[in-house]
Length: 112
Length: 109
Image (cartoon, rainbow over all chains, first blue to last red; front, top):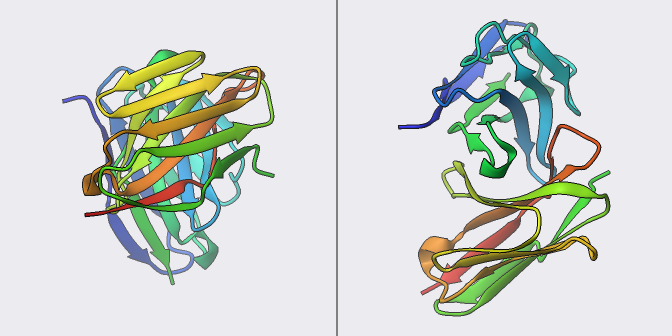
């Protein structure tokens, strides 16, 4: 089944403790992206990647890192999480523009 | 600044009603994407379009490039259509989509 797999689904952590949210797709898509969703603000892009070893900042990159060492994986790293990074996170991928995005199931992160 | 505006923000309908959700944007675009977010949070792609009209089951999406406007229609609405519907646009000059804040639809039996 074609899908984007995101883990974990839920995570509660403490301020300053490094964490990684994993994202993997099995569709050989070139384009992958991370979004955060906050009430009233919609989906906002954190980082995106056009292909292996090619990444770029989205609208809200501060406090996040990404890497794209393999085509299928695009992990999101929070080196020192803070409470304002409490949010719902989505990974998404797409191939040809006409096919639209496939989204992961989301990660609800709480930083206390 | 959000370049994508959706209306209405919230919509309640009786089962069977015809529903229209609107999306307006301010920049030239190469594609527009309609998405559905279920109450559990998962997001699925409904349509990607750059001109004209697309239909899938009871859902119809239209776009008018000159007027910078798109509509999503649901015919014979059903309670299972209750969800948040999100519009996103890909500007001509960029690589990333910009998202509206969504329209929350509730269909009452």
